[in-house]
Length: 385
Image (cartoon, rainbow, N blue to C red):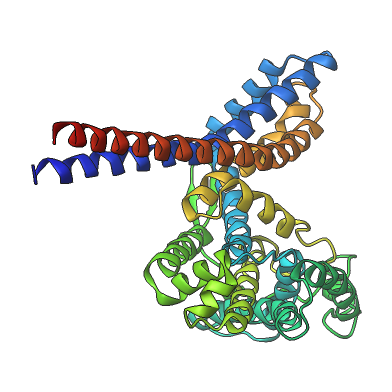
């Protein structure tokens, strides 16, 4: 009797974990399927064959150069997703990642153009500068929230607009920009960074793979370890679920809010580093716009978990990389990919709500079944007595 009860309990817990995993996967899979169906209908309406479009996309993704392009894009997208997800786990909506990474990239590019140190010193220095700038810029929203109760959504959106103005002022020739980048280009941009700032890349058959992919993996592992293995991660999750309960258990909620915003901003500071340290080596007016908002979509699709964000980043990178081939090989409108990405974001929110309601209904049914079984067992015992 004593041996069968633990076995039954283990089986019950395994069924719960399995069902929880299935429900967790159901929402993003359902969102992608609905998005594919919507885009297929749009293509059919415009007289295009959706099967041909998806065939072009999968063919490019299976080629070596396509895979390298997807992984390079996914590296940047993963960092953006993790930066946003860190705030989401605290129930903080850091909409300002877009401004944080652009301002961080500007200062990192400026420092890289001024100093010329050995690579093992310069590269860590630039990463630290980027994280400090991103963290300090996000701290403004955190301070406003804990001292004045200003919603981080409003403050970070406004800070994005302020960032654009600050970058415009700093890129005036003579401040951060030496004329027209020393004659390198007609656009206003910072000085070219020293060769010692070049981050290594991995040479493959399909081209150069960002060595920064290793940094992205380290960030993901650290994110998971902090959340699941540290006191700070426990306080973070507890505060995100209920600030009042966390405060009652001794957590300093205001300090957690400020710290989380700073960490989220520091991670956002890394978003522009793969391209800055590997490709461009300068900051210009058209430096990789919109990555912060892409990170919001990826964090939502990945359910704010490191592994989920990884799959979401790969999916987003696959769509972006293959969109270039649609007008070249099949005369398809590349905008169909934007439609697919937008519908994925909308559908994933709806799908999560549907799955949540279904999971809640299932839990209620299980509780009802257990109570009925217990009542039946008690009745049998009374009859036997």
